[in-house]
Length: 234
Length: 254
Image (cartoon, rainbow over the protein chains, first blue to last red):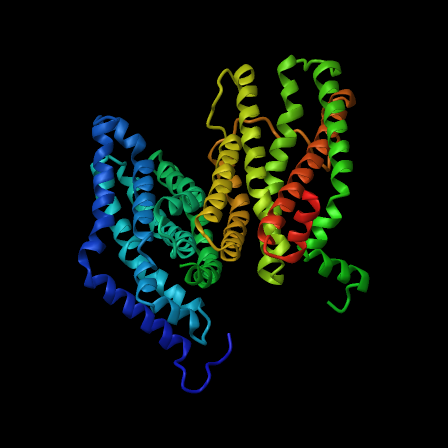
């Protein structure tokens, strides 16, 4: 990255400005904020009704159910990720700016994670308790979600950026990103399952941490490239 | 580019021209197609009729002669798409996009073939058509990745933007494929280990593996023929407004 030319804001100012703007916009619409969370809770409520209310059965499937619900809730929030910015032209201005897109994209994804992934993570132990998840598995589940949801949001961001200009983005977006979510799902669930059977969950958690670092450093480049195409498509 | 010999560089630039590709490959197709048909015929007849039955699996192992080439090409096809994606994004070579367009449905078809033959093979061997084993599951996810690329290509109307969008998706996907594979392996493993290995001698006697090798080569050629034919069609569709295509059409009609 080169130093900014005179009269242009520094990258740090850009990053902070983007983050503040996105958070302010997100909190300006509390219902959009609450919908993925409500979805998360409702989906989890369906499992005891649809499968079995037996505490033992629930305890066995709790990690998987919580993770799949988190995956779907993340997916639900993704469609609107860049749509409004695209509709009012903000996205075009972002792409046209002289500075690299990397940091604004990181800020955008961080803001999105703070309003989707983070609340899901905080809510998970409560719902885990309702599903009779073993108490010693609640912390690994939370840590797994804290490390895994940023990866989900970033990978999903690539799909959201690629489909931002399309009228029928929703279903296609699910097809594009859900297969990419598989490793996160496997690692997150195995961390919680190892812990609930009394084993150490460190292995999968470290893998998730490695995945998160890798995703944070590389995926924003893909999102930036995808946004440049997405702006053209519409 | 200084260190690349002149001839090679010229070839690279010429290869970027869809017209050159269309005109050159016309004479390749009969040879490639003939060789593919011959290899697959010999390999399949040998494998099905003359190779001895497996001491453990009996005759059911013979589906390997279709299953292994299909499974291998399913993965190779995705990697080919990602390579084309890099070429498209770096050098803006239109031909790479046309190849990528042609590979997607063919690769998806081979992936489906690998899944279907694996499933049929699973019935006598494991006693069930479908089992959530690591390798089956990762091939199924590979099929979803192919479908995603095909879906994205169809959803974006302008071919140029669609090509670059698919290129990004293919590159993200190809980085993810090993991660998916290892995570699924970790998740569960029940499938027998890989049949073919480049580094160690095959565990099968030659009378069993030579037909497999013939079929792998034959399927490679079949894949190449299909991709070349698909790319030629794509060249004509994309270049339909150019003069050389309309002249070609007039000549064909005459």
